[in-house]
Image 1: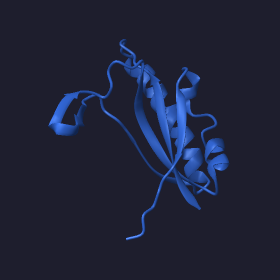
Image 2 (image 1 turned 180 degrees about the vertical axis):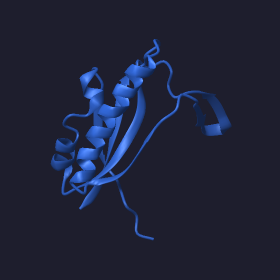
Image 3 (image 1 turned 135 degrees about the horizontal axis):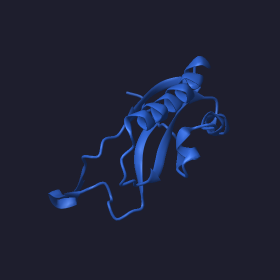
Length: 113
């Protein structure tokens, strides 16, 4: 089996959710990830915070990430799958899709040491 990263993108939101809305959102994510784990295909996950900088060549540091874009990366899940088609199927039901976001599916390259 190979590893694939499912990268979650959505439009930046300015409004804040209520604590109840946040709990409901967290539960949908937990349920979805739990379904992948129940299949033995879950490797790991993390959400990404809002604090970021981008380091460019010549040690140029700017606010980031890419604030001029409409979309931002909010987090990722690493899964195990036989091929990219199976990894795409694992993205079914991802909560980010329910509010207009997207899931980028990428294979993880493993380098022999």
